[in-house]
Image 1 (cartoon, rainbow, N blue to C red):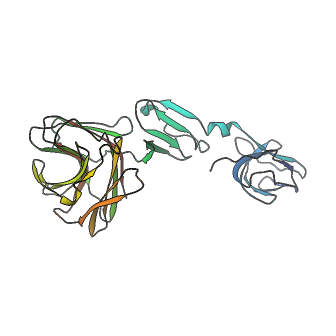
Image 2 (cartoon, rainbow, N blue to C red):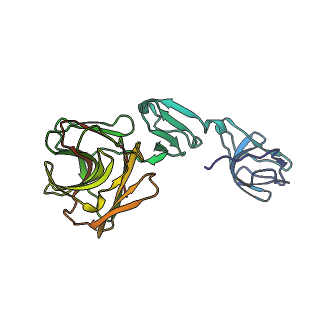
Image 3 (cartoon, helix red, strand yellow):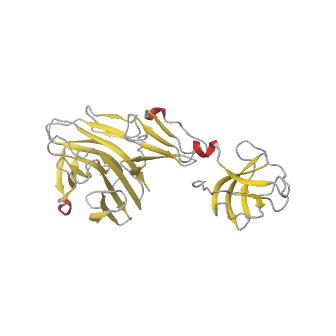
Length: 319
């Protein structure tokens, strides 16, 4: 159901008799009623939901809001009403993320939930919750089926609507992260990662590809806020950078987070970046078998210092 519509002095008598199963109410004059649905009307003791108006004819859903569909006679007054359902659709809720209701009613599609312990906000569309963060629509990562890669002392929490990874660093380059089975091309894989800048030196975090031999390609942002694509022969052996993706400096442009996307069209692998999650820039393209043929995808990072990297994954979507 869409946004409710309202009209002033919306009242008119019925022009014809209606039975209890009729879904069109013909009025003597319906010009004062909104020209599009949805809105609620009352005839006698029955509440109906109007979904469309054509001239003097209202298309309705009968017996709404715990009332009973009955017959109505010509001349009975039909008028638009405001009901408790109208107001319940616009409620704001605030609690910890764990206490977000699992669902709301079909009439509650404008309800908003603000988590007191998370940057995630949610709105109900009448069927399901949708999540937003920093004005972006996000799809929270479901970590089920993921496996640690070189975990060490790294840890993970997912209790506030997003994934918060604490990746333990090492004195030498140690790649750590979590991975799952890669999708079959063609696919589009999009992530939104928060907490861009770290105080550790020589680190990068982001999304990565991995093959069965252990080779890795990580596409992410360095501690300086530079967008970079790097190749690793193993979790402890750096290979080289892709030279075409060295100078995209984003750390201070969008310090709340960054959007990354890999599009594999079954021929080429396109590395894309976005500030707002809507407008995308392709910064590098290779064949989709360059350096490795991916068997796994994941999120993680590496640090050359003995300090940890904190990595927040706010959105993860594979289509």
